[in-house]
Image 1: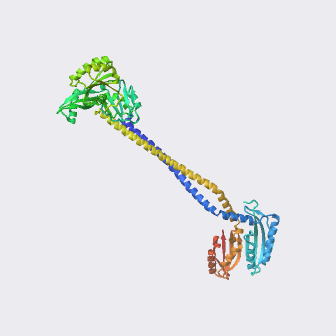
Image 2: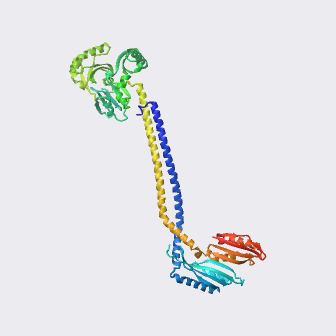
Image 3: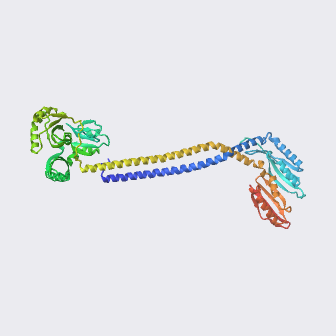
Length: 179
Length: 406
């Protein structure tokens, strides 16, 4: 067919062919580059994300151990009604052991949180500064799950040698529905 | 009989009727027309076309030279006078039959371009251009012994060719329209007489006829008194030295070859281009597969990450109960450790799990500076966002507040 064309027809056919191929090349190149950039970017992002995840889960064993420790150590709320009383009694015993006078105790209702059920008691104290500090140190501890929700200490108005404290202490029991 | 060199081109030559095609493999077929011959040719084969006698003009000359170049010029001049066409419209060549001291006897062969184009149209329309165009009679002559004068007869395209071969060269050729042996035999003496009048030797050493002219054998034996041999179209014949290919065909063939090369290059380029595109998109497919593999790994790793994140959130939420550095007594102790002097007194300490506030009184601002510096340097207290406003100066001393928020 090419041999039957006149030179002009051949040149025109060449020109059209070059234009078509050029256009097709440009479109294909654009498509390729667009997809290439997109995929390359995705690959980079996902590689980074995967690396981060792998770095994160390198400590998995530690967190499994912590979870098991929590499950074994965090106290279970057997009886919501008596838990407050028992907790207050424990506080009072600890205070007594450190010569801290506990006044105006209040037992609050159980509050459910995502990671714990809190049993809260409020009370005032009167004692010397060092004894108060000892009491606070004895009341809290990692295995006790006791938190001072609020603690306000000041010099007693009527006796500058004494410290007056107002506390809200909570015991954090295991949550109702374990997560 | 001369030894025939192995042919590498397809040889197309006139048969008793139509054409015969001898392929490079040696196989010979008969066709009626040249367009049928094209179908038998292998792709890309070179073609050597031998013309029938009636397609060429033969002229026997005796010229006063033995130099081929001089003879060429002389032949051209002679043909300009004798040819019925302009010299530019014919392809010519000549074959030297014999040479004396300063004289050459030769036969010129001329083929009209227009007739050649018309004859070979079936070949040219299929882009098959013969590389060589010769006269079949010259091949037959080349098969005769060089030291003999041989009378050859063979059928060509419904006619009978009578050729006188001298020294292995064609000396004279004439066609007889009668193929009937008796009628042809009756015309033969007149042909021989005409040849003798042109100076062609008619004393033959032998007679050769094609096997299709077997009916003439006895007549020829009677007329010439010489032994009659049979030869076959199927037997390969020696090459002829002449070549009547028009220069336009050579140009056309060059263009065909050039466009063939261009076509091959374009095909190669197109294949390369397609391979490149295929490779590029295969690479994209591979990248996509990698991304999908990463997605799978992420999906497989996600539960472990979510478990860990959940545990971290739980531990964070329980920090006031579990982290000693978040205990009220710990904060208080660290603040006490930051007291630079016993003259500085705490007046009030308020604590919540996420913040604390300490009111102090000191005799001078220097103690406030020292205390605030120590608080900032404490590793636990510095984790809080500390707020330490300038002290208030009062009559009893300076009072200030240190607060921290997580």
